[in-house]
Length: 473
Image 1 (cartoon, helix red, strand yellow):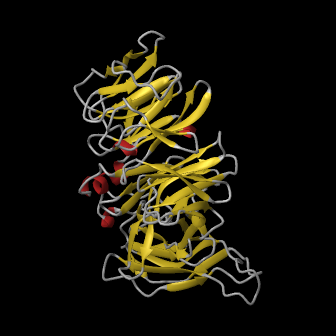
Image 2: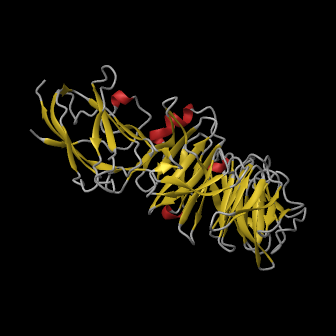
Image 3: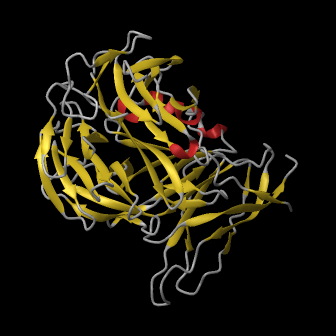
């Protein structure tokens, strides 16, 4: 009998019915694929700081110049030190809205600028100041060549401060993106480029030392954005990521947009709205993910730009036996302490995200993989002898500890529901043999597998093979 590879860790394709899938997964939830194709539980969350009385964390920014994390919740701005202690700075931002941040300079001294729909504010880490003359409904701020820049939502205009003074906004310090008659949803800076993201176009400007900002000739992209907070620049792949006007996820490199959401386009189109998307780039343990939270739909989609794979992350609700969206709403990286901070969507909690933590603040992370109907490339019947794989085991600290388990079930040829679960031990202390086999038997044309791991232990699984006989019928 031949031993054939089993695509348990295949990329997800949500654009086709699951009965069509043999080489693709149907769902990959709360886990990711590493460089060798093994399944890993996503990193977990442990509490770093608690903002007493605060609600959803709408903004996080690690301010390296002051060695503090600036946090915004309910329109109030807080300063959080390296030990998680918080101090209130001031209020005035909108109580609901993702916050845009950028450092700026006043006569050589650094301040932090921010906006989320109620004008531009700056802080020196002691006080919060509203900048009179800035666009009163600015949602995004950027800094280039000693100018602080903000968009004016509902128009094609952007405004900029006096040179080297982000507190002074002359009425005539503005310009208009004129390539198309669309509104500027967001402004960003990358390198020497001022990038204006509109609803139907993207334009690239630069400082010519006179105007000061003019458009690059040919510096336009025939693509707009449907969600202003979906925009992220990912340095590892030198690309912009955003949801375009057609709800496709775009990767734009060297001003060339490419659609990369083919496996999840159907899911994106089915959402009632995408304008409330809040994206983050999360980097933990040398890996990175582009994460999209959709509040109205209560769902989180994840694009792995290193392996070009798609996942869902979430919070398991055992009462409804379903996933809510991932609790991490905003993020920031503390590069001094190598801590990736995550702000809670429901409360004033700030977490650190670690690949050595296997729960979310004590709540289970329910990693789930569901394959397509695997048929080994033929519709002929197959007789299964065993499935073998590698599993990280020997996790418990000593022999008295209770080992965890991975639960496996399957169904054949889409007939009926999944069968009873088979529990595979992850091993007590010292029991670290990683080669495992399960003997299921039976005859099938296509077999679908469902794998769940939810214990407070590491979960690494891969190298799947099946000892199977292909029959002549």
